[in-house]
Image (cartoon, rainbow, N blue to C red):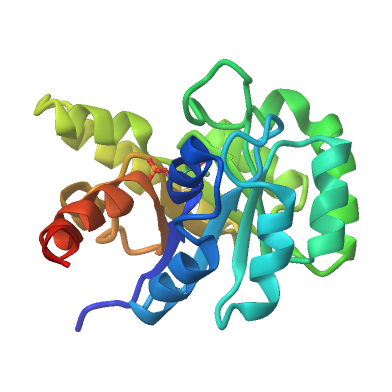
Length: 236
Ligand code: PXP
């Protein structure tokens, strides 16, 4: 019997497309509702410090209309923790953020920032929001996530996906590292999610990890949707 793995769909890329023309289209709400209709379990949105795609008003406009829930990705900063406190999404995923990066490049260094991160986790958890930490698949980072009271860890799959897409045979080793990390975290009582760079093919491997509860996918789904819909759009 196959296990049900939850899917969070990241719609940041749709906001990027909208912002390119400075208008309202494509309407983020319509996209989020279509994603829900298609069976997604949550809508993931990353409110970046430079607001390059999702904006504050997107979050507050969408939130009351969703049947599912928002998984809000934010950096660990007072400004972002305040937004989370007002929005009260079901879960918040803390991610590292650098202005110059194109996308989130690595996991959060929880191990070396235990005290700093603890101060951000407390106020979020007080609002009954579940906290996830986006980390590399390393026992050191998982131990630190447990110590600071995270509910969930989201394992960064970027390295595995990169090897897999480049057809580098070492991808199986990278998959084993993810498997080991998932099992270790699960035994510590942490819920295990994964994301970054996943495609239909690579998600197939990660979803078979027994402890995996949820995958968060953005770029590949939005990219695939172009090919699923382009013919119809041209022929309208
Ligand atoms: N999970 C986290 C924590 C992320 O930061 C991102 C990228 O914003 C994703 C998942 C989705 O990654 P992708 O767009 O490559 O599927």
